[in-house]
Image (cartoon, rainbow, N blue to C red; front, side, top):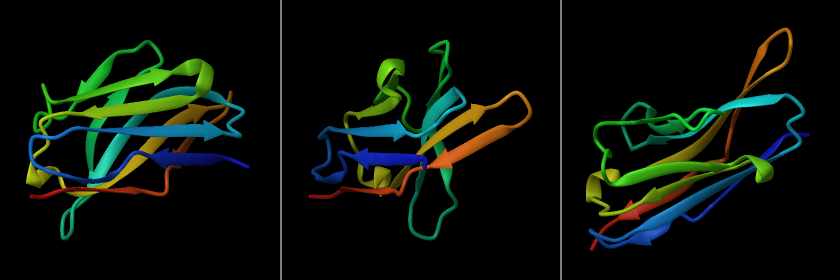
Amino acid sequence: QVQLVESGGGLVQPGGSLRLSCAASGIIFIINNMGWYRQAPGKERELVAAITSGSVTNVADSVKGRFTVSRDNAKNTVYLQMNSLKPEDTAVYYCNIRARSFTRPYEYWGQGNQVTVSS
């Protein structure tokens, strides 16, 4: 059974930092991209940052220079370091993992983790 366990969200003041983690277990296929999406109230889910198996990153313009995505392949874990947080970063953050077998791709989602930036 595949499980993605997220941690690290919460309430932080503007300018503060948080670090999200997502640990995956039970995935028997080759893991390719790992990343984070977010969804704010009334808005569509959007990509925040992703990292390939070769450690190439793709970061949304809205968070570039403030957020950093990284991964630990030995632990099947992806991280999102969020610095200089702004109120507009408030959203539910979802971990996303893409894997493949020899015949098809697979996509897995975490349960979501609330991040609230407010004074």
